[in-house]
Image (cartoon, rainbow, N blue to C red; front, top):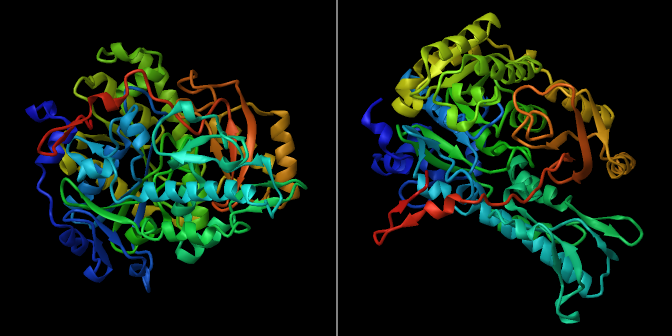
Length: 560
């Protein structure tokens, strides 16, 4: 390894030579008339850029095995692959999600790639960026304020305060806000009732932002948000409160995708940030469509493992947007696979072929999951310096036996140069693939329980699904109110293919526990809550925030 391995991600990013964002727009074939500048290195893309444009690019989806504390490098691989494609003479654009402040200050410390495969300016992207997530939070909380205000001032709609579903949002991990009481302090402060906070990126408003095609679509979707019920049991929507117009106004600029660049000046469109464990986990349709109409290859990602982000990418995003991937990359590391085989994080530097063989069962399941959708797969092993040749050979042999393309990725250390083999294999498979072969996992008109059970048994490998009494009642209500034909957005732990975060590898013989369901009518899907999943994460014992600092010159440190 070279000395560059001793540099932190933020040091590498701060040393990078960035091009003015106008030059990046020119690379991507985006005329300056469609660019709104946010300083020298960031810009918003006006939606009119899509007028008279159609898809010309191949779409590459990057997903991963089940994440572990050892790290997999999905974003790093996505960015490095985009850089590698450009090195091979193809115009590529990277399409990513915006990082949430929750993980940045919590566990991860940043989410813009790593090493020499990063998007920049990384400090801006990881922190406030262009304000999109703040706008989502403002729109979400405006609706919350209007609900309580309506109840205080006569409650013309007859909203039952005990059946208000819409809560508050905050883009910081804060477990103390999971359950709260609002309206304390007497009549002047409204009616006391229970409420809660969710992290902003889990808000239905974020999902709506990512799934909307234009302002009109955005406003219509916001109007469909179900906020609660009346005393007689009727649904109350944001449109009933006349809140959707003001919410859309707050999101006017946030709806425009953001243009930045990689360390090698490859165009990158970053927009939207839903989590894949508690939301649908994909960047915006608009960002992806703009990218698809302006280059040869678009490299995008879906959050967490293929059981979460990829499944939702196919069954939700592709269904709504009308496009499908041409190739899927599954990212893994020898370290993470050994963890799935039972090795403790402190022992990962040692060769352990027995554990690796067991951990490969996790990779095997994710490959099977992608193949269910009739898509070609490349396994990309994100190489670490203490990986042994025997370990890498075992993974390659595993892929060879399954006739799955394998590539050893070194984009963290070498940037695009380290991903040339991966890029070539991706291009070969993408160009051979017939888009007509793609298959959804389920049809929308199938019974709600059938759709849930298909995901549970075919994607997760569960034996069956167990529903709580509340969940069964919700299913009946959802069907009776005409929402049963919507796609499913599973809320499930990211740490296991099952709903039990302690079950690593490829769990078998388990039942999936569904405890609740909720209609996200604006987003256009049904959220199914499994296990103990929460929509407001907490901070770890030592949050990443304790290592983040800024000096007198404004130079930030500690972000990775």
